[in-house]
Length: 382
Image (tube, rainbow, N blue to C red; front, side):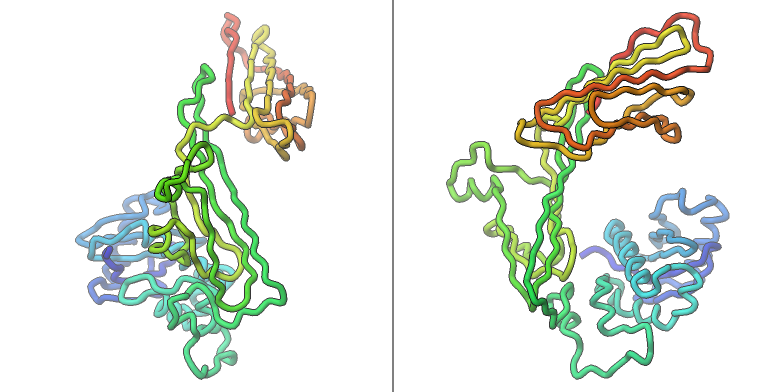
C-alpha cells in the first residue's frame, strides 16, 4: 500500500496555517508553515512551482483554490498522484458545503471543517470524499443535527458512494459513449499518430440498491470464448473504472458489474490505440500577394458514409497576428474572424457524409515584409 499522508493543512495566501489536522504525529504545523513561507519567499508564486516538493525528509503536495492553499505532508513514500487527486476532491467537498471556498468561508465554518477533516481521512489514508455521503451525517446547521437510530448505511456499508432509501416513481438509466479523436498529421498530409479517448457517461435514477451489468465487444473476452473477432471486436487500453465497478468480476469474465451512484458519473474511461481515418479532412492553401495581402483557400471534406451527418462542426484556422480587413466567403456555413485568438473560425451546422465545402478568405497585411514575395504555402490539418 502506498504511503499515507501525515497531515492536511489549509493555508492562506501568505502561507500561514489556517486549519490543519494531524493524522500520524510525525509532522508539525510549525515545520510545514516554515517550509511553505520559505517556498514563497524563495521561488515566488507557488502556482508556478511543481506541486510536489521534498524538503528535510518530508514530501509536501499542494494545490491552490482562490486565496487558499491545500497541502498534505508525508514522511513516507506516498502516491503523489493519489494525494493530489484527493486534494481536488477535498475542494469539491468544501464547495458543496460553503458554495465558495476561500479564507473567509473557512474561518466562518471552522467547526464543520474540522468535522470534515476527521471523516475524509483515516490515519492518513483517504476515506470519504463523496459530498452527498458526508452530508448525511455532517450538517452545516447545528439545529439540523439529529440523533440517528443507527449510523447511515453509506458509512458502514461497502457501497459508500450510494445512499440508502433512494426512491423514484420511474426507474431510468441513460448511457452516453463520448469519444474524442486525436490525430497528428505532418506537412505532407500523412498521419503520424492517432488514438481515440472515450468515456462511458451514465445518469441513473434508480430506486434502492440496483445491480447493473454491462457487456462490451472486447477482443479479450471474445477470444477467450473462442468466438471470431473479425472486424467487430475492439482492443481497449488504459481502462479506468469508477469505484463502484467490481474489478474482480471484470477480470474474470469482462462483465462490468456495479451498483451505480445516484445521478451523473463517469462509469469508465478508455483509450483505443488504432489507426483512425479523420472524420473531416481539412486542407488549406495560403498565398501571399504583393507583400500586403494574404489569401487562404480551405477545403473541408467529410470522410464518412452519406447516411450519417456531423452537426455543429467548427474548424479553426490560424491567421497572422497583424491581419486586417477580412473578406470571407463560404460555400456552406458561416465564418468569422477572431482577432483575439488570431484565428478564423468556420462553423457548419450540418455536414453530411461524402461532401466537400470550400472557404475563401482574404486579409490585408499592414506590416512591411521582405522584398521578395513569400513562396506559396500548403497546410493540411484535421
